[in-house]
Amino acid sequence: MINAQEWLDKNYLKEQRVEITDLNVNGKNLEGELKLTDFFKLKKLDCAWNKLTSLSLSNCYGLTWIECQANLLTNTDFLAALPSPQKLTFLGIYVVNYTN
Image (cartoon, rainbow, N blue to C red; front, side, top):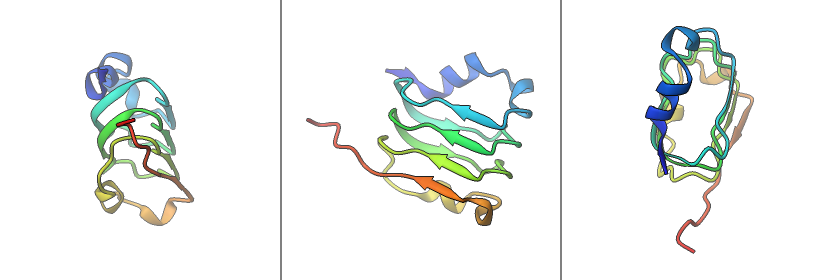
């Protein structure tokens, strides 16, 4: 497994993050918390098929699309922290049993 935040910090420099509108980290074998607080212009996030335990999207003002299914998320608190939840047009979320 790969620590999600370490991977993000290595592959997306902080100064680049402010311009990114589409982030696809689907199936990257990431685990733990993923903090996208520097992605101010992010519109589409695909972080499905990892082992993420939490998401932080508090500064993602333009987010309209979230695919986060097949992770280890235990709650949807990250949705309550969205600055513009009315903009969300797609949410893909379901649980996969990783114990088998």
